[in-house]
Image (cartoon, rainbow, N blue to C red):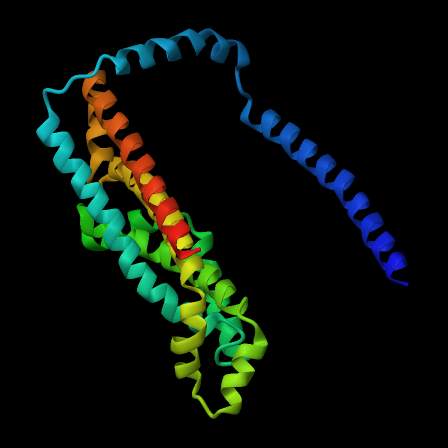
Length: 262
C-alpha cells in the first residue's frame, strides 16, 4: 500500500516538472519579446564594463571621513531596523503560530496581513516613509522595519510551530498559561533558529541600506550614487569595497554565533 502511494506521488511530481519547465520557457520567450532587448548594442557595450571596473579599482581615499561616517550611518540603520523588527517579529510570530494560542482565526488573520506587507518590496516602503517622514535615516529605519517585521513574523512562526506538540501538551496538563508556555518553552527552544534568521536578515538589511541610500534614505548608498554620477570612480570604489568587507564580516560573525548555539 505504501509503495503504491509513493509511486503515485512520484508520478505526480514527474508530471509537474515538465509543465513547470515549459511554463518557465514560455514566460522567458514572452519577456524577451516584450522587452525588445537590443543584443547587438548590449554586446558592443560589454568592453565598457571592464573599463568601469578598472576605474573603480583606482581607489581614492581622500574622502574617507565622508565614506566612514556614511558607512557608520548605514550600519546603524541596519542594526536599529533589525532590533525593532526582532521584537515585533517575536510578538507577531507568537500570534501567527498555530500552536501557541491555538486560535486558527487569529493565526490566519496575522499571517494574511503580514503576507501583504511582505509582498510589497522594501524600496516601496522606504519611498512611502520618505513621503511621510522626509529625507533621512528615519525613513530608512521605518521602511526596513515594515518589511523585516513581516519577514520575521513568518520565519519565527514557523520556528515556533516546529516545537514538538508533546512538549506543549505536557505543560498544559500542569495548568501552565499560554504566555508562560511560550516564554519558558517555545521561545528558548527556538533561539537557535531566531539567531540564524537574525544573522541572515542583518546581512540583507545592510545590503538593502546600501541601495536605499541612493533614493534619499541616507548612508553609504548616497555616497556611491553621488560619486558615480560625478564620475568620481575612485571614491565609489572605496565605498563599494567597504560595503563588501562589512557584509562579509557580518556573515562570519553570525556563523560563529550560530555554531555556539548549536
